[in-house]
Length: 294
Ligand SMILES: C[S@@+](CC[C@H](N)C(=O)[O-])C[C@H]1O[C@@H](n2cnc3c(N)ncnc32)[C@H](O)[C@@H]1O
Image 1 (cartoon, rainbow, N blue to C red):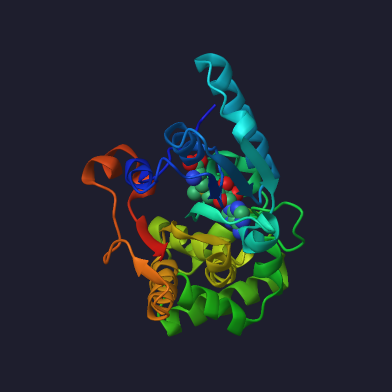
Image 2: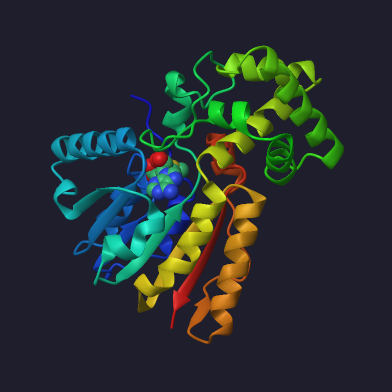
């Protein structure tokens, strides 16, 4: 089984107070961060949220296996919640957290699970949903969005110039009139026809994934919801992988600081070391920002 390598693990753990009682991992994934945090905060419980049911089951399996092999009792300290981190206030209900981690983005397994259509490399349905109960897939977007909507996605999330984004959007709409674009290969062919190489195709795939999962909207909702759920004197950490995400976090944290109820724990975002990036390329664009409720 391929297990996702938790990004900035050492750094995240270094900001945890071992006296923490309630930790929230908003994006449990394979549970790498969660297990390390619980190993440090010996009396803490952890609420582990993930919107992807498959991922949640995998986390249970990985953590259960580790408990058996190493004689630990991590599983019993985790409350697994299959849900969206935008719902953090309802999930916590009356409780307040001492440490909130939101490690955004994709799990390695999303790319490895070929049939889910996240990877440009393999032929699969153009799906890309984290939440497989969600109605809209990436193919729906490609086949139904207007030229303007598609252009916006490529301009905003893929940082394409306006004319290039428009050209691409127009070509998609012309192509889909002849035949629906339903697989990853159909979509890649359309991109190649517009002269896009592998690197540009990967960026366009990423922009489509962001739109499919409403990743920026979810982050905005989380940033306005989490302050209500954080105990005084404790911290929220967000790891971003896209410049827009980082901008949203920076802006939201700065606004909280202006209320005098919060302080930034680090002025600049923390980035992975060269060594970490060499060992795990997925970490290369990661930025960690931390805020503390006073
Ligand atoms: C980068 S991975 C987290 C990896 C995890 N920290 C670990 O150590 O294994 C991001 C996870 O967030 C989940 N996810 C994405 N959007 C979500 C959302 N809105 N609410 C909850 N989980 C989400 C994905 O399914 C994925 O498993």
